[in-house]
Amino acid sequence: MNPIHALNRRRRTLKVLRIDSSARREGSVSRQVADALIARMEESVGPVDLRVRDLASDAPPFVDADWVGANFTPPEERGEAQRAALAHSDALVAELMAADVLVVGVPIYNFGVPAALKAWVDMVARARVTFRYTENGPIGLLRGKRAYLAVASGGTAVGSAIDFATGYLRHVLGFLGIEDVEIVAADQAMVRGADEAIGAAQRHMEALLPAAEPLARTA
Image (cartoon, rainbow, N blue to C red; front, side, top):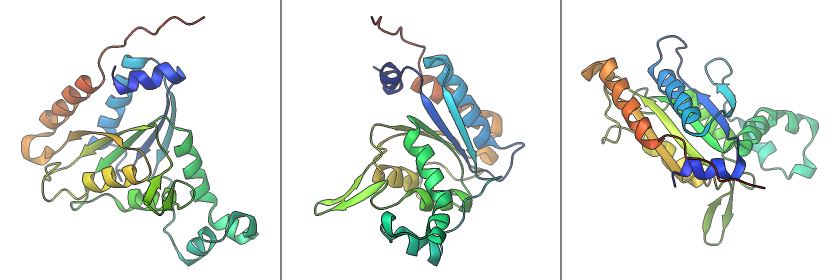
């Protein structure tokens, strides 16, 4: 069974968290790919419960000394200022924990991820909350989720030696316990043309998200 259909059978209505990180709202290829992914998902499993986090209009704060101090203080000992320092991070963590599926729009900027997306990662990667350390190494606490990376680039080939974006995101999501990660790429749009790049992404997502399977009857 396709993994997303398996999620749908368990929960019926998928909770999808979409993260957009392109600085452009108009003409963004990564946003177009994310749009198409979610539309294809609804064709495959039916309507989804969608939450959108646009990092271009609501950029996360960067980690600073106050944030670090608050994060390393036990929750029961935090003062009002420390709780305020973590408030944005707490909100981002809560919506990520609530999601079944994560769709991340990733334009490749200078071979890596946008600064706002890196800031989002820093806000949600929290010891004892989304991962924990053990004597056998770190363990991610966000298991059972699926992620799609809607990637766009002008010249960088996804998966090449100069792509430092997708490998990083796959690793950090796995570190948090999200090991089921698919990359849908409209890459090298300035080399092969935007239409060809987007077409390749469309064909890939159609293979990843086949037509809906009938749900089993339940009492």
